[in-house]
Length: 474
Image 1 (tube, rainbow, N blue to C red):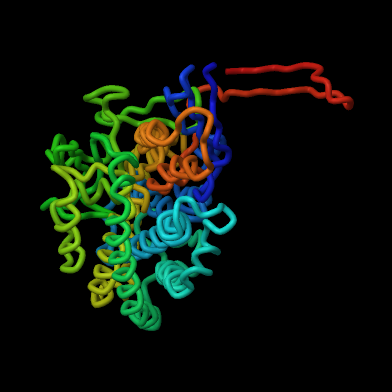
Image 2 (tube, rainbow, N blue to C red):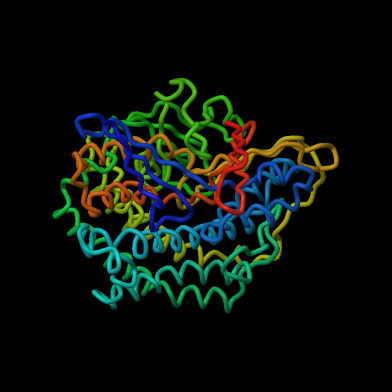
């Protein structure tokens, strides 16, 4: 008989989710679905708040990537005020975002994903985690922890604390970098660069042993979306939007964030709180696209720093056109860490970082504003509509994890079809299915919002355990 295998919860990701694997009568996988089962209501309960408060409220969506929401929210506020922020403020925001990318990528690689491919897919679950990695390779684990600390140090030096800094505001930022802060960040650079190099060299060795995973862990054609600069260079907090296809061809370029509704649609799935954005010209679901480090390296022509550009050149040789294997998200993260360390080093020499000219002041000049920035997991949109007093009337967040939703579903189905057969399903096989989700490093706290009525299932249970009444709203 047809049956379902349930992986609940999916482990070593940020947030709560499960995976359903559906088997046909012969025991072969017919389908697989990734379900996000937690709900966050930020889009609704922020209505009625002044837009100036949102850079302090929206970072509370997540403790892993609060800076991403802080910066996207501040940029949406810039648009409502219709101001160009001072150069110093832009450079300081960029510096903080570089720190955010480093700390998040280090967490994803060393803490969440590396136990699988460094310790082994078949390692028993009690040892297949960051504690097992510490026991097996304490120097590498410590270096990974320290690399994340470097990124958090940048955030704390600028914003006053590592998590939820109330620092970026509509129109700019609250405070500059200090000389002491610059010296503190600079002192970290040699160690951070060395750790990133070690991790990248290690992963290149991993790839030699994991050709099968590279071929089947989310390896399929799709579109890719990311920000690029005017010359197509890698961008993380400015520029404009570019879509490329799996052949590497540019299909849409220099798109303005404020016009995102012209090219991004949002579908709602019955099996998940996670929305499913798609590229509108191709429709749903053919307009599936991916965002994040893999996408950013696919859409850019170059990075603009020597070490990262050398690695990007080697990386692009792994694809015929675009690099399409989601297992290579790990590779892309490590290249981006190298790029971030190089860019931090260059930025620290900029005298504007110490400037006191940090904020443009204005009133409500637009009733709608869109802020876009590259979060570690991919392109992040904050879209606000306000009244004449600057109070939020409507708000929409398009999160990186949501934009990867269709691709994540296809990834778990692809892996499940390869590994799952009949009744004999070892735990290590299911772990490979889970790892397909870890490739994307999803942030589920950030990404779940309601569109329309919330589904609801309520049971009234008597003291003896019998169900007195049951009400379901789909």
